[in-house]
Image (cartoon, rainbow, N blue to C red):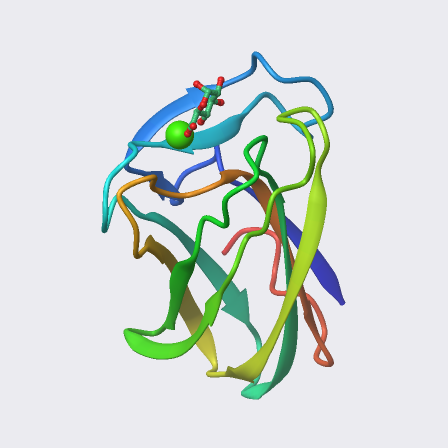
Amino acid sequence: ATVRYEAENAPATCDGTIDSNHAGFSGTGFCNARNAVGAALQFTVSASVGTAAVLVVRYANGTTTNRPADVFVNGTLLQTLPFAGTGAWTTWSGSTLTFNAITGNNTIRFSPTTANGLANIDLIDFTTEGPPPPANN
Ligand code: GCU
Ligand code: CA
């Protein structure tokens, strides 16, 4: 199943503001994190079983400079994503990660490694092979 997690919806935390001034985002806004090293966006996703997982992060970077970020899964560094320029702040693109999710809650943290901070991040789509979690969970 694939579940969408919007950056503007708790328990996601955005070290910055939820903005809506660049069209093309999903939901009611996107995370414009502070332009600083370590100004992070964190999602919490739920897996009903421990399973291989695929995550697509939707972002825009209207500059011509990469906005690299370390991606931590449950506190462990998975990899660094480049978040390359997309051509405009209104042009949104996806980057894909794969990892092993644990049963229950998993934190996915995007932590920028340069003073420019993160790209604007709209959402993540999280896909596991298990069934979706119960609705009232
Ligand atoms: C502009 C843009 C923001 C973006 C920022 C940045 O201010 O409007 O959406 O986050 O640049 O460079 O990080
Ligand atoms: Ca920003």
